[in-house]
Image 1 (cartoon, rainbow, N blue to C red):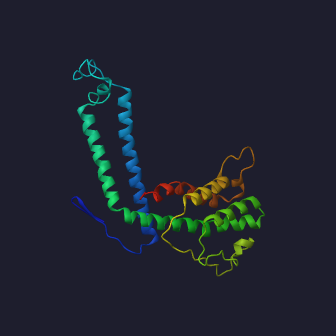
Image 2 (cartoon, one colour):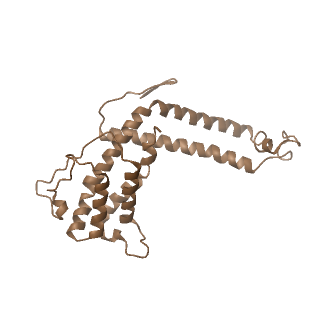
Image 3 (cartoon, rainbow, N blue to C red):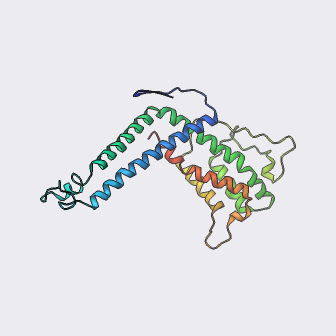
Length: 244
């Protein structure tokens, strides 16, 4: 998009690549994080001032008979603080306007990106630890991974490919086993997201109520991928609620 004075024009392509959707989604997340950080700065300063009102001794401008609320607000900010506060509030307002103008673009990219990342993870990434769990008869890990897939996998033909060697704990044939993951403009429900993240937590948790943890039975490379997905997906509910 180009910025022309106060106007912002957003060029919108019907079909964008996974990488473009991801980049746009990350931009939206950064915008939300900045709004959150800047709003916190204003709220924290305001709260601190309410708790620490000034008086006539600290600020000669403050009349002795000033009300407590005036001592906490009107007479409690230096010129520098007032100027900085106006600057931050202007930045918040400006970014809000900018993001509101791009809401349609952001919302579409967010849904497409989250759908792609979730389906690739569930259908492709989890396939390897599932294969290993079946081969090594790790039934609890197998049942958790199967549950994750059943909760939110959106298979190309509507059903899981039963010929998949991974489901029998076997290696792929030499020419590979192709799984085509679809692409759609729809995100998971908050319930699906909650269930998937909770189940994945049980796989990667360091402590398990005194019991042996499951993560010891999962290869390091898969643990890293599951952990990364768990961290990334933390923000998805906030992103999916972007246009709310």
